[in-house]
Length: 355
Image (cartoon, rainbow, N blue to C red; front, side):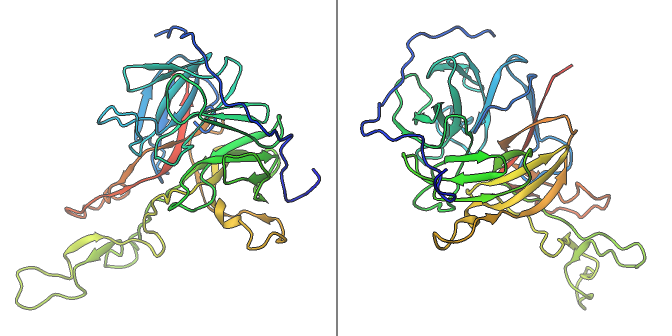
């Protein structure tokens, strides 16, 4: 590259061609980037979940299918608009079959294309883009037809990631393309031909990466067995109030949340995660790496927390699914009637062979 801080496109053209169209629908037999691996068993952990138990599990398609996850449709209404939850999309050749919609089929691109899923127009619904070398064809609806726009970025052999990188969730909610070269990432916040806007390092060469808008589970204070009071409980008052029928110092209103341990919902801006065996390292916001001046040094993205999940051999992917944290869940103590905490955002999914 001629400029360390700018990722150049392989070439620019004055008149970009605007379309790919497939006309024949191949019959059906029955994310981001493809899920990878094989098997038709999918296990979604839900946002912030590190319990080791999925909140949603299902079988879909065939073991060898190419599968994507995205917020493609509204399960309650059947409309092709996002509802804050991801579901599976199977690809067979240039045909795509969408789970939960009576197996809606549409076609896009050519059989050998690299396909990406993302929210390309910021309307809250995911659709597809085709990558041919360093040429991208974007379609904003899940339907057979021509691309809505196209652009060039990076080099033909680049590994790419899809996400909302700029952290601006008011005027720019679109997903765009990041190029990954080993542990070096190049960010561009527009679906247009041009250079990267900034770059940074994260992890080690050879690491496996996931993209997600990570949420964080609440953590609770534990009871100290060496004391007479249960520190894990939050009481209505420090002492009993005279003239009442109950002892407020013993009336539990909630479990006690650890300092800094409140649940954190997803913000809408994406981060990275590194998978090393069954250990996952979750990063700070990618947008935090954008330099204040063009001459700023290339930085290193920080990891904020880690978790162990599943098995080292698992094929992991990202999927958006709500997880409700029940205050009773990790305790043998009954706290009484307390509202549970729903946490929203992306979580880890696992693909496995069933049986």
